Length: 240
Image 1 (cartoon, helix red, strand yellow):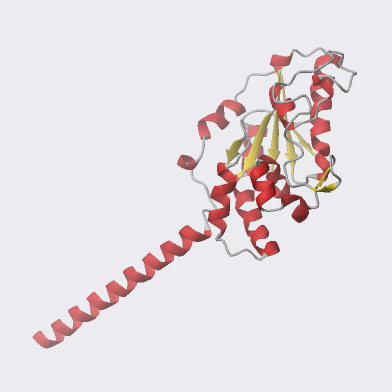
Image 2: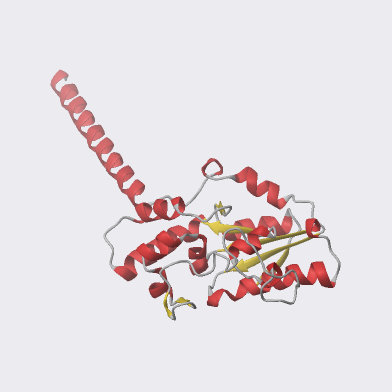
């Protein structure tokens, strides 16, 4: 009986050790492959809640999945101008959020990412200044320079802030740009497949997140964020 007990104990210990090894290996794989789902402690939920509860009179959220030569940026510019100049809504009573997911999530990252991973060639984005696939984010910086110094204050002039469709200028006017964490994970996997890269997805995701544009808020999942902006924040919904 004692021999049987010893055998049973040895069998249990061996099985348990094997199980621990398997779990450890699984943990390593999960860590390398990436964190597809953010929990509340993983991101700036409080900042998002402040955005949702913004007391502005007019609030809009743009649902953006396609880069489409940055056309949505012109739509946002038109919203700002129309509300302020056409309807007389004070600037402080206007709040616009741009929810970028799908391939459009790549607009949230800086020139380092665009150059290293050849984003323009991958997503068929042309740099208008060169006519070649973009090796830098062509939609972020304003032509007015980092200081945003404009030669005209006439809202009809292309040399004014009011006709500037860069992300930088729109952020200056109060637009909040949102990046989707889930989409970032998905796009990293698509990039690996397209370019036959050897990196693990999470390695690329972490690098992308380290190169997020200034003032961009990374949210857990854009489809969920947009739903909450609509239901809790009473933002009107626009898809482009």
